[in-house]
Length: 253
Image (cartoon, rainbow, N blue to C red; front, side):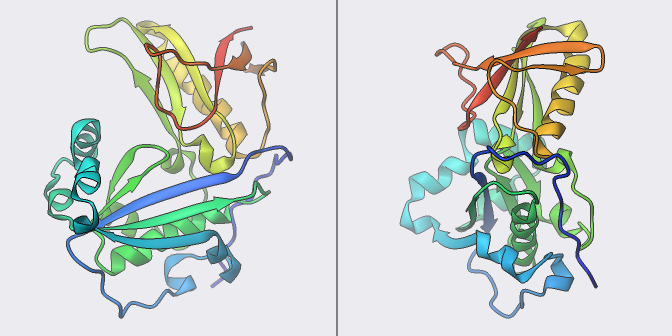
């Protein structure tokens, strides 16, 4: 069975390295009798695995660091995504899938990362944290992805509406654009009645970046009837989003 690679039809040179990290949790060591089969898991080419580094880390190496993945703000995210966090609480091993590759005109590194995660699930992983999006996945969700599937932005990029519980204004931003060597996108002080529309605009622009478009501070872009100007997002203590990536601030053009 042929596994097509995910192509970037609008690729432009000038992007940064593509960084993708998955933290895969299990309650004990993983089994060693499950082969990595390209056809079973959906690997587009043998060379795609050249992007992937796998490290096995146990809780007893650094209990405080390990437990940080299931406490504080990450625990809130885990509860929202998983509902039941008992599998995360029971974990004693973290298997890290680490990818850092030069920018390119295809997304085989994403395929290879998720294929590796599916292989690890078959070996005993129960919960996955996508470090770039801050999103937890149940192992069963990722295991069900078919070997041949199209690229889906929603699986690799989060569009987040950040607002205080009683606030009528929000910051809307992406998480995950580092996977594509592109900056994240930020819109500040969005009134409540515009949250859906602005999130849609941000998602559309993120799709262009994922497809390979390069945008920089000072650019002006048009999306439908909207013209926006891009500038460097320089967070203060009050506006810090902890993106771990460069970001562009979108304002009305």
